[in-house]
Image 1 (cartoon, rainbow, N blue to C red):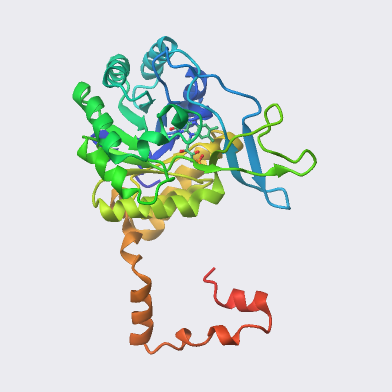
Image 2 (image 1 turned 135 degrees about the vertical axis):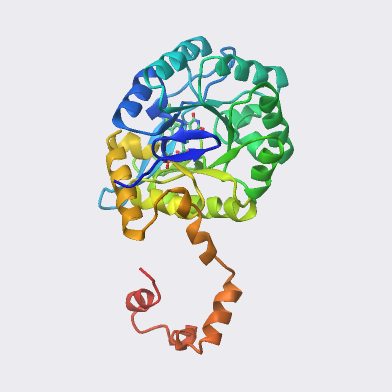
Length: 363
Ligand SMILES: Cc1cc2nc3c(=O)[nH]c(=O)nc-3n(C[C@H](O)[C@H](O)[C@H](O)COP(=O)(O)O)c2cc1C
């Protein structure tokens, strides 16, 4: 087995696979299961001060299925943790006592008030957690009260709030980005300017997963109504890879925790090749269970052996060098006098559209 451990922001991860904040990290029991199963790190479900009201509804999930029944996407309208901070403080301590070699990351979210962010940070820092992740990215519920993605879409707020947390704690900080923004590099840069050590990308994408054609109601349907929620799982991977690549290219050498649509080692390796030094999984675990980490570890090790990589760090961002502009692709074709430029001009379409499509696809 290759050495799949990695040091990120001074913290040693036994493997780069981290549970993303959500149901698989929502209390002591779930986090204990994750570490026992072999996950290198866990970002706990986002917490706030106990006075922040959190009231979830049911049902709160919706699946996107192909006509064959395969699940390819997932929507949720779940809020941050509905458990009190006092309970969490005790559990953070107990988790670290039981799993001292695993990386426990506390995810924080609060309203736009310096004292609230600093109180929350100070209380949690004393429990022995290893890192913080700042949730600037929850897309539903909280943005209506100027939290979560509301902040993540405002780079000045991202810088300022990150700075508040930086002021009161020496622990490494990741800032979690919303993909629901035109230029994700702006809040990412702002986070580093505010003192972050890394960024996590992406949180979920605002979505409406479907409409029930019997009831004519959008899903998930709560008392006959719905609200747009966060989209995750396999279908978001291409969007997440692009966002991660943008951050990696704009902020070279910075640590990124890649997230979005990982269902196996294949996607996880793709995130590393696009610049992530750790990879988070949330919905994949909800649908497959914690045991999927075995395949992640084995698949990564096999990939490294096959390609002669001795460390994970060696190939973080390796494939970014092959991203360029469309103009450059055309120039390279012209330079090679390649006939591939002309073989399928638009005027040639019209014999068999499915075959013509296949001919132009790379996989
Ligand atoms: C049910 C559910 C609850 C989530 N809750 C949180 C949360 O409390 N805080 C947070 O930062 N992200 C939360 N997320 C987002 C995930 O951590 C992750 O960024 C996103 O789902 C994309 O990754 P995935 O495709 O592996 O799920 C949640 C996701 C789901 C599906």
